[in-house]
Length: 301
Image 1 (spheres, rainbow, N blue to C red):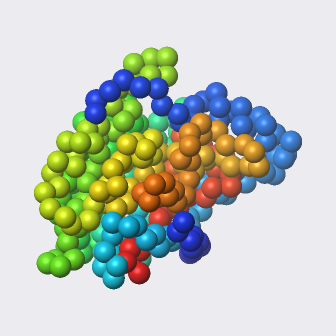
Image 2: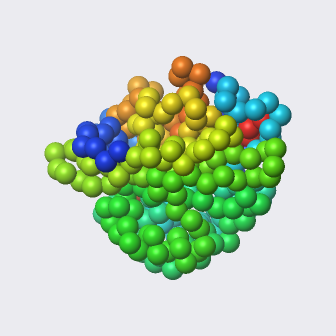
């Protein structure tokens, strides 16, 4: 299946309560959409989740040097497991990502399916072997998501290591060649530990992450959840995030994600963030109005 190309114009260990997808709000949204009928429900369950689009952005962050070209492919929220992210579909995602020939590929967490409707388990060795086929001149880099922490963080760490993919957890690396270098910084997950009653304790350390940046080269920040964006300093050229699945079900006036940064390109106080709609599903295996996507970002264009 050939992916659609969708261009879009660019426009610390604390306890907190996080907005997000919950079973109640997602099923409530499905109920609100019930009037659309069984045909739409069938499409949301059996068609749209198995699609794939490539969504392109060309942001112009103030902190990114003009003419310093860099392409980034973003894979978020794989949630490996049937019915909609079986091994064959993961293989297709990897093939499409490689065909984009981006300079660097980043993975934004949530590698395993954990909802109660999983019809096919995809073992860590299988999905990680597919991700191991990803190729980019400046490498493949990852952060972890909340579902990785909640349902087997040690297994996910080991699977990514076996695939030769480095996890950036509150750490930054300097990439590129002289005159075109940049920092890739990865933030620890902001919802890593569940405290109950909708409260979480993160393992994120934004100041500690950025402390690794020791010169004036531009910075790209990887974060699973987009909620951190208001705290990100303008020293960071671009923040890339996932987690929301773009709302997963998007109808007029209806989105089950209870947060300000659901999907797309955000610019606030001259700071830029792109939130991917991701690939897999959470809570229930349906998507409507927000197809699975790989994001491709072109900087310095």
